[in-house]
Length: 554
Image 1: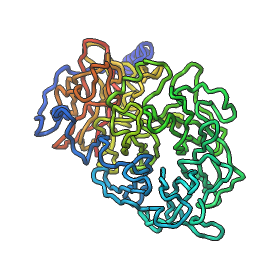
Image 2: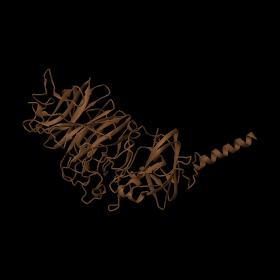
Image 3: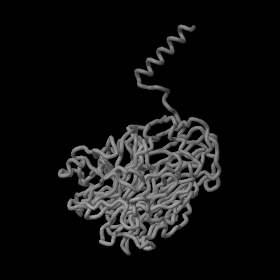
Image 4: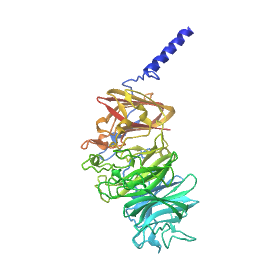
């Protein structure tokens, strides 16, 4: 009897190997019975659409409405659960404004935390303070910024305070007199500087980066700092040129999207992030007034270069991190696809909400901006890294998004879930954090999860049982692959949502035949329940796709 059983097991294993199956074919019912009642047990956010937007629980979700924080060039400094947002003030750019929040729902204003006019110093009467950033070193708070001097040249400096919201004072220590002259005065920079930022490496060495203007346009430079207010000018290095692959070859400029059609060679707003031993210099190109103002990156093995931009000959937007993809091709559909969705999404920073890294940036409040100076507001989205440590952003978004766990109390339990599926291709992409947004990029379609015709099923098996608060199922970024309805979302034990709807009125522009990237089916459970898995069933008459599934659990 044992021999018969053993032979049966061997035959079964051989058949599995020959057919490529690691487990039996997944079978799911096409219809399931729900014990949940809409608007009593759960809310399908689509049902709340009022012609202008969706209603949602602000302690669990957010939307970049561009209403709360009217700051350009934002930086977020976090301390003790409080997030301090500073930036260039379109209200009055001769002073520094700050907004504080603990939940990204409510904000407190702190206007004029630094006002150069309060001091008879080196700044011009109309100083025009740009891109302030706050850091804390040894218990002292330093705010780095750029401003015009009395000769009309923009300079870099730093002021100090004993708390993040000041008031900030000029630094006067030893030979450093921040009242009489800019702290970081390099007299060789005759055309002005902009957008100073600081990076501290793992060994404690400090670096300063900023944008310099000269006869060629703008470029990014870097220098070591001896301390928070003294630079080692002997280490001054040119790092990034717009359009060029690296600073050593600034004549050849194949990255045309970094030099949009108006021809201005602009590169500014540097911000450093280190990942997997590599240094990623991120920066903005194309001018803050331009709707194609976006964030690109270059990578190096050391903080002061050599920085290389990822590029494949003939490729497009190969180093784009965030933003509206510009093009030098007149009448390209790229010009129309994001109309009414986003404009000028750049001059960014990175900050943590708990363990999650976010990208903060500004956007034109007028989403239909046609490359004019417009009021700019703070927005934020998720930053992730691929298997090689290369950063990527899920954004910019203009749709309902889950708040990070440190604020909502819910984490994405789908991220570590085991995935099984039926009638689905590339199902492992359903929880890889990657949401296709720049659908103009070659090869992006292959990063979505493809569904065949008829019934398709995706199951996520969590590592344990969680209390479920909501779910977001991200739709395809491609107009012809969009799913309008989900047959059911089944968490087991009768916890089923039938016929969840995609808010096409909010997220689809039928006139231009495109979908706002990062848009999702979102369902919020008013009465939470326990579950250790979820099955999503979709029925389609033609090939379709999904991006990502996020399940909020605790």
